[in-house]
Length: 513
Image 1 (cartoon, rainbow, N blue to C red):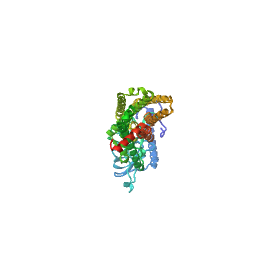
Image 2 (image 1 turned 135 degrees about the vertical axis):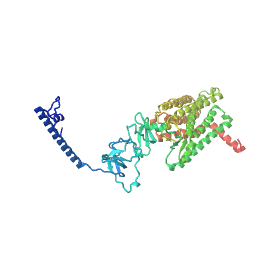
Image 3 (image 1 turned 45 degrees about the vertical axis):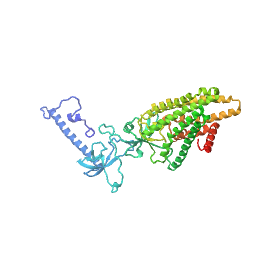
Image 4 (image 1 turned 60 degrees about the horizontal axis):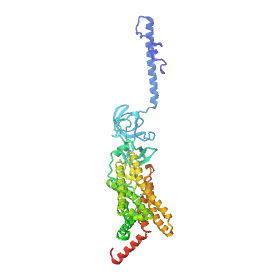
């Protein structure tokens, strides 16, 4: 139309109409013959005009067209304008990929390239999609870029990127996201992917870990020897002092009372409690690779939770013992008989065992995306951060069951101490009030340290877990509290100190117990 200024119908028929039969070229009717001749001449003129328009177009295009001629063996860059690459940003993606060698020249405008296996596309391209590549003599010294994974949206050629590791997790609003390290790509290509994505799930479903890497308390190498010496001394002091309490209460007849029965049982529990975490931590401090086996992690977590749960109700039982000794002194030996004391101790261990079994089973049935634990021992919060799936059930279980264990025992303990304090305030003799209050105050310090740090650690959403903060809090209830307990329970106890001096004198004089 633009080249001839006539419509196709007018060019064929000589007039604008929608219903007119075709006329033969030769006719006996003069008017028909003239009309056919006019149409034939008009068609010839139109063909001539079209040829002239094509020539003008070709002439203008050829002025800007570069003659692209390739031969087998040439190296070319391939344009990504028509390719759908799996890259994070189309705008920031590569404009050309390659260079690739030319295998065959099919015709003047099409060539076949030698493409890597990762590019699942047909290897024949128009020459306008290619650009000549000039190879430098130093090209062999330059590392080749990693092959790109193609093609998105095509079921026949689609291929997933391979996940090397999951480095971290976060919550962006409500969905959980993982920081993924892609195999073969640099750290600048790390990306946050939703936990339900096929990449994270494929990595989790195909990964089974035989061991875990523990981050430890500090990454500063200069502090490792100092921390080892410090925590080794703490561990030795904790174990020796608790062993001393057990020996003193067992060998001193005047200490065979419910209070010291609970104290010796608590000391045994503390020895087991610190031994569940500190020895492995000490071995990892000096080790080059801070690892723990999968079964070792399961065992450590089970015994740590068992002993921690048992300690909660052991403290409640000790507070109940002090309540009866102060508020019901005449019925003390009747209420806390030997059978009752054994039942309270046994019940504490049973509650701890059930609590540990539930949490350990639920935690280790989760699929883990990585085996790097940002803690110095296997515990529930750092392991939940490694999960590739929704951990809502685990978090609710921690909230409900640990709430029953920790908060329940804490409430029982506080009820006992509130009644003890009210009874102390009613004591008329100042010396008796001061002695009783000092004894109970030291016990109350232990309760606040242990329960306070435990509640802060386990009664938070997973998104608020902080690596450095969690390490400090964990040190409080796993190392510092067990270290202070023997001194708090014995240093202000005249009966224990008298029994210890008596045993020391007996050893010095007779040379035996």
